[in-house]
Amino acid sequence: MDSNASLRSIPSVDQLLKSASATAAIERYGRQALTEALRATVADMRNEVRKGHNVPGQEVIMVAALARLDAGGRSTLRPLFNLTGTVLHTNLGRALLAQAAIDAATEAMHEAVALEFDLESGKRGERDDHLRALVCELTGGEDATVVNNNAAAVLLVLNSLGAGREAIVSRGELIEIGGAFRMPDIMARAGVNLVEVGTTNRTHTKDYINAVGPNTGLMMKVHTSNYRIEGFTKEVGARELASIAREKGVPLVNDLGSGTLMDLGRFGLAHEPTVREAVSDGADVVTFSGDKLLGGPQAGFIVGRKTLIDVINKNAMKRALRVDKIRLAALEATLQLYRDPDRLCERLPTLRLLTRSRDEIDAQAQRLAPVFVRALNGAFNVSVVACESQIGSGALPLSTIPSAGLALTPVDGGGGKLAGLAAALRQLPMPVIGRIERGSLLLDMRCLDDEAGFAANLAGIDPSFKEGTDDEPS
Ligand SMILES: *Cc1c(COP(=O)(O)O)cnc(C)c1O
Image (tube, rainbow, N blue to C red; front, side, top):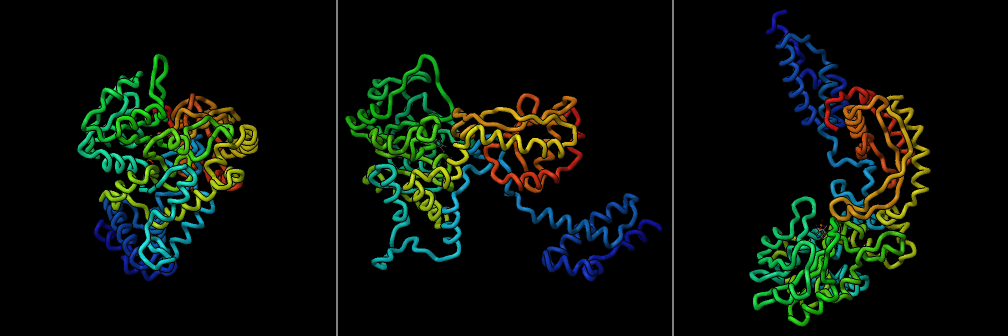
């Protein structure tokens, strides 16, 4: 056959749509999607035939078109197994929600709700009414509001209290959190003039006092959760700073970042400053995240003096940064759990994962080791190892907790094999994400809940993982 005759013998899209397998595919994906997939597939096949390949039959084209539809229909926001050892991993979506929060959010999605409607008076209500009392009860604050995330909270507070004026911050606290949250940039965007005081390692009371002038809008304290300054250091504590701010008549804003509502020491974890402490230390406004240690959905809380919260609520930016009914429902249900601290650990996934004991995790790793030995077919050594989990990634990388996991090490060395294995695990129906550490792929089992599902998923690993070459970067 000459090339033109070959091209003409490729089944047409119309013919393909009339085939028996097309009927089932239309039922599943819809006629329009199937037609487009067939068109694209036939176009590809024509190019192949022009290059001298054989003319494909109907079934071959149909299989290719269905594969195209499957790939296009698969969510890129896929659930995965987070075995990185970082419990609140920003790139993996941070906190897992409590069942109560999921139920509340689901209900709010299904139904109309009294979002800004006062059921008692029948008049307009406020979005913040749903959380205000609960947040104040749990933090000791006078008033509270909530916005999209803590970055938004900081931006809104700075703009509301300091636009066109100065904000005094220690040079030791000018943080950058991952994802382009940099305090000097946020200040600039908020229209606030940053006044840096002290030095990187030492800031004194007098530095703050000397910086206050007629144009001071606020003083700010930032919790530096993702780095530590050690050695010859000095910082002014929140309580002392509050007394300076009060004396000078300017508000003190404390950005806690993670801002836990419970003393984590109670659960055997390192102490993180609680929101209640920040409020009682005298901050006028405290900001913190909803999806870090608090264990809820993404949100930014602003807690503090009523007069200041009023100013913040009147800022036109507030409307652009507000949260919807779904998140409000999930936040309310999450906060309710804090009223029963005795059962918080079992109900709040973040806390449950953070407090899993090393022994329990180790036992889980021991149970899963043989599953990996089978799946990896002798190409990797599988050993149960002690490791350290992190509370957070961008936010709290310094706080580590003893954990256990599996170290998968190529039998004949080679970083390419490791990269190949990591890629094969990412390609599983439910991707598995670990971390490469000292020549092994380390899978920290702290965040693994569904052990049986994990084992079944692993059985589907693509055996080509062994073929990684040593030149590949790991
Ligand atoms: C995490 C963090 C933020 C940003 O909070 P998001 O909820 O990620 O927007 C701001 N400040 C501090 C100190 C933080 O730790």
